[in-house]
Amino acid sequence: MGMTITEKIIASHSGEDHVRPGQLVTAKIDVALGSDPTAPLAIEQFYRSGAKRVYDPDKVVMVPDHFAPNKDIISAEKCKMLRDFSREQGLKYHFEIGEMGVQHVLLPEQGLVVPGDLAIGADSHTCTYGALGAFATGVGSTDLAAVMISGELWFKVPSTMKFVYKGRLPKWIGGKDLILHTIGRIGVSGAIYRAMEFSGEAINELPMDGRFTMANMAVEAGAKNGIFAVDEKTRQYVNGRAKREFQVFASDPDADYAEVLEFDVAGLEPQVAFPHLPSNSRGVSEAKDIRIDQVFIGSCTNGRIGDLREAATVLKGKKRDPRLRLIIIPGTPQVWRQAMAEGLFDIFADAGAAISTPTCGPCLGGHMGILADGEKAVATSNRNFKGRMGHPKSEVYLAGPAVAAASAVLGKIAGPKELGL
Amino acid sequence: MSQYQGRIWKFGDNVDTDAILPAMYLNRTDPDELAARCFESFNPEFCGQAKNGDLIVAGQNFGCGSSREHAPIAIKAKGVSIVIAASFARIFFRNAFNVGLAVLESPEAARCAQNGDVLSVDLDAGQIRNESRRESYSFDPIPENMRCILEDGGLIPHIVSTMKSKRQ
Image 1 (cartoon, each protein chain N blue to C red):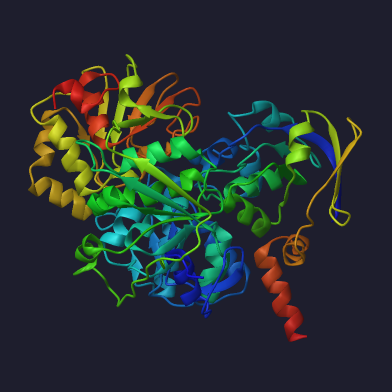
Image 2 (image 1 turned 120 degrees about the horizontal axis):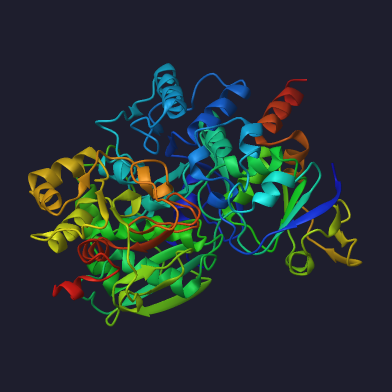
């Protein structure tokens, strides 16, 4: 029996020739990531265990991105805790504001995660790196501490669900629409404990930025990881970035899948996930006259240059509805600089947007755009749970950058078609 | 600890970690401070009244969403002895054991239990008994290695005690 790409990566990191779903293994970790909300607990546990040094200072990466630039004194103390730890341990990769980006946009961009890696992070959206043909999954702070100490972690090998997207991608349809539509079909626990493997002709056509978006939201279907095969687009992305040699793995033709689901994307319209679950997705045309108070474009889901270009295409020469706020947050300093060089900031500023330095900020109701009682927002982020972006009685609608931008102009949830685009 | 008895707080499906502990408190690490915010806006009654030895019984996918370990830490520090759900989100499930919070899956117990029922759990016997409804359910025993982690109070104390016993 053959193996899936997920099984092969896990096998290669645990000294096994062959693994099967359900098997417990101990695997070596290539990248271990911490950020300001979760790393402080991990650092406390690290010292509590009596450990003195991390297993490899080049493989433990710290990115204070959630509440940074420090939003208050408590956050400042936590970010300082990461900084002090990184210095004491001689970590090669610690990113301060100015170089710091939203971690899951930053690490692939900087070539710190490469195809074939086994990466863990104390952040649930670590699964984003599956777009590179890596096995990546979110863990808690204690697991991060265990990895910082030993360089290893135990895993139960997940079974794999294969998702096949057929047909050509229609105009304005991107990774966000595909993944929202998929979660809408299988539900928020539809892939629980499993791997989601994305494939098909629409995926071959999908740019890397869209693949990161899809892998990012695998956890919203309950999955352990999301993963893509490495192709020419992946190689082009990785070449010139990769900080290490890498190995490419591919699923065998006779690999065993728990389930295979097919989607025809040809007739798909832009998707919107209604409150309060990412699985409440519908076509944008089903959103009738839903007035909104804020639009947020950014996050580890849609804070890449392709996302900002898409938003700019819609916003060019237009203004936001005066009754709402438009917040645009490029994912990393490199994305920020590129957007500026391409003139996107002029388009955004002319449209009346506030443009921020990179941060997770409003996505998790941290800072930089909290919602008041009863307010509604369209956000390009990944979660619309109750109170996610602020007041427990506020509402979040998830969408891709094109819908978010069109909604900002029209003051209500709408697709680019309603602007004649 | 292998036996628990207490009053149930009943929750539905897909209880997310933002509901358990809102993100605005993620810059805290003190367990008591986190416990004071546990389910603060999602279930204020629980937040105000839950007491030592109470149990949580929930539907599917309990603890979905973010990887914040603050969520099981808050529940444990609140004094909840065990969380029983039809199913758990995988990161939460791992985190719970790692911080020493007992969790187990029982779709039957989750389906029948009502808020305020009294439930007894015997981990050794693999039995849950709803004392209020006089019904019993069996469950697959928690694997031995996970039981050890729980009894030591979490993964890190477990590693420390394992290292100590190796040295002796």
